[in-house]
Amino acid sequence: MRLRAPLAIRAAAVHLPRRSLQVSEALAGGLLRPQDHAASGYEALPAAEPGDTPEAFAVEAARLALELAATRPSAIRLLIHTWLHRPAHPFWSPAHHIADRLGAGRALPLSVQQMSNGSAAALHTAAAWLTADPETGPVLITAADTFVPPGFDRWRGDIMLYGDAGCAAVIDLPAPGRDDLQLMALASTAAPHLEAVHRAGRRPGDTGAPHPRETRRRFLTEHDAETFRSAAQAGAAEAIRTALRHAGLDHGGPAPRMVLLPRVGARTLAALYRPVLERLLPGVPCLDLGQHTGHLGAGDLLANLAAFPAATCSLPPGEHALILNGGGGFTWTCAVFRRPAPTCPSHRPTDTKAQT
Image (cartoon, rainbow, N blue to C red; front, side, top):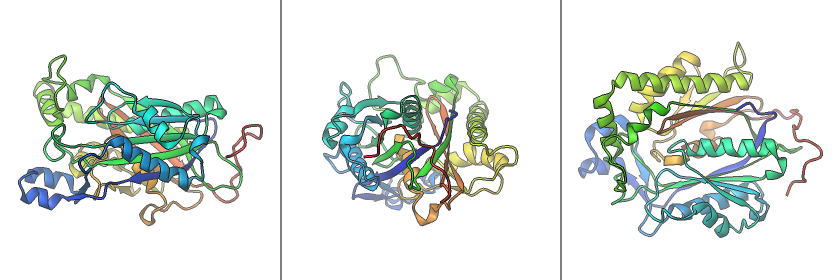
């Protein structure tokens, strides 16, 4: 997506449940297979308590993001919610529930679902609306998942380990006098011919608990594993190249300060993502921040966005960073962010609405 002008990330936040499950204890207790422990490289997973809901986590993350952005819930004009897996209430709109809980009664609630790439799809949607109609902002994006039994086995259900969380971000047009992180470019690419990775072996109408490991195994018995790996690497590479071009960072432009990776575990990153980045962005640090969260479902991108103010992800003025993400179906997204220099002029039109 080629943006007419940068968009401002007013704030991003993550809400984690108090309980944290230690991966070493799951391994010792037989909940986790040794090969999966080695493949993840992760240490702990945040875990919901009985009665916790993903929407409650989304509300808590949104409240924190709104507070950090100094934005009232009543100022939000568009609320976009996304998720990967939720254990109940399929015939229901969680986006409207979240808006009501927040007191965002003037917002248009919207749900976006794109598997683990849900936050990226929501960011695309927010950027398109803000570009088409500046009165859309501020936009609130929320993502939340809980991977709880019996509906999901966070330890053995897939090749990656899953943590529970709510994530949120507030996005708007840039405003004078602020140094908000700027979204410079956003690019996605898809490989729909891989959709059966999460469907193989399941019958139409099967509404039982998802078993990503089993459907993936069945898919790979009918297709060559190298074909899948090549398609995934090609999709990620195309998203990265397009985002860099749209941000003006190709053909000898300044290298990004860092790349934040999806929180999918060491083995998946080594197979699908790191080779691409080593080829396209040699020498650029690539950070996996999932050691104490695992994969956060649809929230990985927002959680990584919230990490920029941290010491480990400090982004100096004038420098760029990339967030790379992906999700089943399959889709890959690369977002380019920049911390504006103090003298960077505002791109906000003078005739748009006043800030709240």
